[in-house]
Length: 231
Length: 231
Image (tube, rainbow over all chains, first blue to last red; front, side):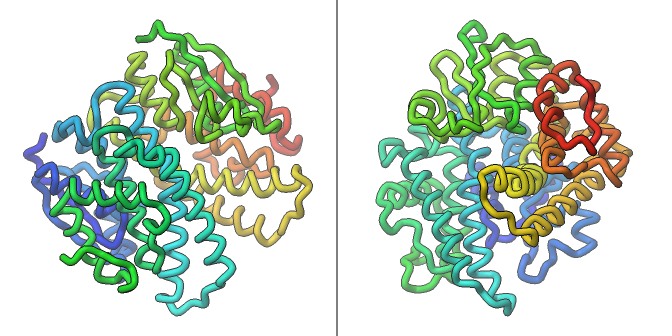
C-alpha cells in the first residue's frame, strides 16, 4: 500500500496544512510536495477542484488514485496506511479516545475562534476591505475565552504536559498550529497564559526541526513586537 | 470491557444526541438512559460540569469511570469497545477514510450552518430577545448554499445512495440528524432538493423505528406546514 505515490497539497500559511506537514516529516512518510498558493486562489481553480479536491480546500492528498480531503481524516488514514507509531495516535481505547475528543472538540472551538479572528483582522484589510473594529473586538474576546478554556481544561493549568495526557500526540500538533495563527494578526496567545506558553514550546521542541520549518513563513510575517524563533 | 456500565447523557432536541441515540439503539449496545434537559440548562449546572462533562455539553458518556465528550469521538470509542459491525464504520482503508472525511467536513459546514440558522431563528425569540431579520436571511442563505453542496458533492446529485457510497454508515445518521433541525424553525431542507429528500427517507427507513423515536419531539414541534411522519 505504502508503495503507491503519496501527493500532499498544502500551503504553509494554512494551519492544518502545517500540522500534516510536520506529521509527514516527523514520521518519515515518503511524499511528494505539491505546494498550492492560497494567496493566488490556486485552490479555487477549476483544474484543482476537478482533479485534486472537489471542495477547493487545503490540505488534501492523493494516494495512488485515492483523493482525500480534511486534515483530521487524512491523519487517521495515514496512521493506518503507514502504521504510525502509537505516540501520534495511541491504539489503546481510552488514550485514543482522548486524542479523538480533542480533534473533534477543536473544530468549533480553537479552530473556529482563532481562524475567525485571524481571517477577519488580517485577511480583510489585505483584500482592501474595511474592518469593523467592534467586530474585531468581539472575535478577539471569543478567542480569548476559548484560549482560556484550552489552558484550563486541556492543559489542566499546567498539570497535564500535553493535550491528551503525558505524551505528545497529533492533537498537540493540530492545536499548536492553530494557536500560532493569530500571531500574524498581532495577538500573542502566550501573554498571560504561562502554561499554554510552556506547552507550545514543548510541542515545538518535540517536533523540531520540522515545526520551525513549517512555521518559517508565519514567523516572517509576524509583527516584530511578538517574539518568534530565529530560523 | 463491555460489561462496565455505560451511561448516556443526551437531550433528543440536540442533533448529535439523536445521532448517537439511534446508533446505540440500532446496535443494541446496553446503556443507561440519562436524559438532561437543555431547556432547563441542566447541562450547565455545576453538578453536571463537575461530575459528567467538564465542557457542559451534550451528548456525553460515562463508561465505567471513563468520561468522554464529543459525539464523533464517542462514536469511534463505541465502535472499538463494542466491536460494531462494519456497516456503521467500515474497517477497510478508503471506505473508512470516506466516512471520516464526512465526519470532519460536517463540523464547519452542515453542522455549523444548520445549527447557526436554527439557534438564531428559533432559540433567540424563545429567550425573548429581538431577532434581526437581515441576520436570519444571511444565515438562511449560508445554510442553503451548504445544503446544495451536500446534495451535489456528498450525494452526487442522487448517483450515490449514501454519504460515503453504496451503504449506510454513521455519517448518514449524523448528517440526517443535523439536516432535520432547521425544520423546527420552519425551513424544509427537502424542498427543491429531490435527491436529498430521497436520501433522508432512506436513512429514516434504514434506522427505524429508532429514527422516528429519536425525532418524535422534533416532529411534534415542527410547524404543521412542514410534513413529518405520524408517530
